[in-house]
Length: 516
Image (cartoon, rainbow, N blue to C red; front, side, top):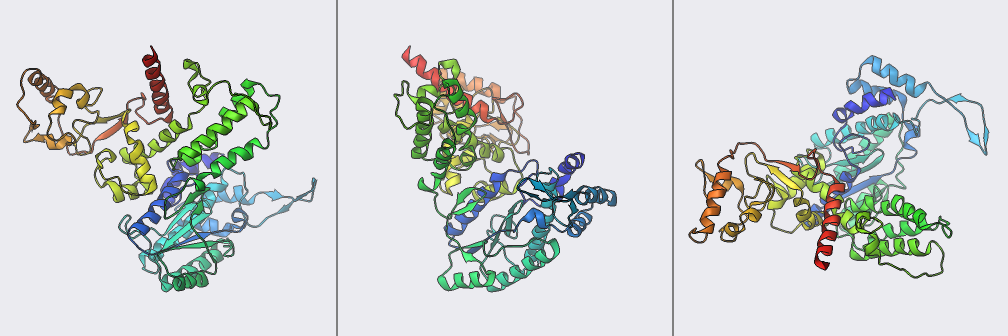
């Protein structure tokens, strides 16, 4: 455990950004988003590409110990560290359990123990050797990666432990070089690629070129959507039918329960702890369709009122009422529509906070440049990106900007001076402003704040303008980038819980006030 903790502290510095597993600060969903954006870019620019999804046979069991030690040495680990790892990996004896009867213990000569917290980190180091080989081959122009306009020298691969996706431009020479690289990696690492289970996907290629790809790589041709890390990914929009696997998981989980005699409190606990958590993973990338939400609500409501029995029972209260927080006479069941928005808003927060991950770099280069997502007017892009544009107004309710250079902040519409946007504090001035979406840095010219209005300021408008000038006199712009904080948390860090409470509690209060 001590070795695991110490290795975790440095693993981010020694493993390439293409690996997203078991590394602090990296997220499994980043690989899904990157692959989706790459496929969308290929389709929108009418480019060609080859995507190879590798399948490793019993990956953990076949790692060569000598290769692992060589990787540690090349990464700069000391001889003492390598000796500790050697004792942790090799100093173990195993036995075979057959029908409850254990055989004699013997020593193994390769592989990593599954279940050991150190093993995923060590396997990442082994997998990073393939990453280094592909990167060097790209730099030597032996292979050519995709989307060179989004990432320098192009993207050649994505990894999540042993789940590896290789992305190349179509070229018989590149494919042959890739096959040699994979063969060399197999020989060195001890890992075995099962090409019969591996699949290759193509974008923009004809039948003859597809045949060339499958024959060179010796694996079958797959069809979109790709099932990557448990999520469907395609070069086209993911449909409602392709997301019904979330609903199928609901039904499958219910099929194993015997709850005919369970109390309402017990059912509530199962709904909160099991059923409501099932769609969380998918909702972190996709905005589900209304039909998907209705099915999720129907299954949970049916389970609460009639259990797993087939006999139908009367639903005494609408599900929307049960979703209300307990403070407002509900049972506090998860509102999946609201939670979907809160989970998607995490990506906006990553982009706003200058996250330097590979995923955010690609998104910025593709859509933002030096702008904030709130400055983007065009609603074009991938399914994922359009979802972020749809929910950004919800994120803005808790967003506050600490002004620096003013290039990423809208003067009237963002909260940067005071506790609310200036269009709320000075609505009369905002109504006659010639440029309602102007940025802060554009207003500050030659050391003075200059705003253009459609008519002359008199009376109340002049008083508001004087008050606004007084507030602006305390602001000084610099050359730095504006800093975004989450105003609903004392720490300033985004929390799905605070946005969820804002959306649910605020809406209920509004409804009750209307009734009064």
